[in-house]
Image (cartoon, rainbow, N blue to C red):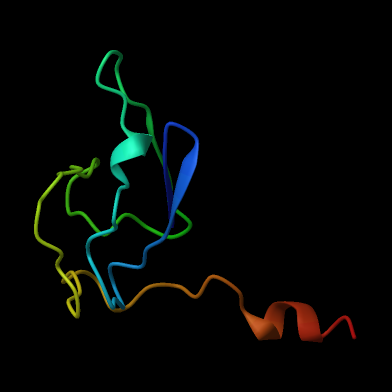
Length: 86
């Protein structure tokens, strides 16, 4: 997926494969005088067991880790579906 804060693209994350579970947020992206807008674009199934995931701000990075979740998922693209039209 992708994450934006106040329109600033923090980057790509992939909690099932890693390598990190945290993304760096530059200080000047956050606004103290107004609510901050966090936009998450999830391209696959949510890695959380519940319907929603929590976003937490931490002061130490979590690198070289992955989340435990289903390993049996349907692939995003299936070659057999479109190769028969070639």
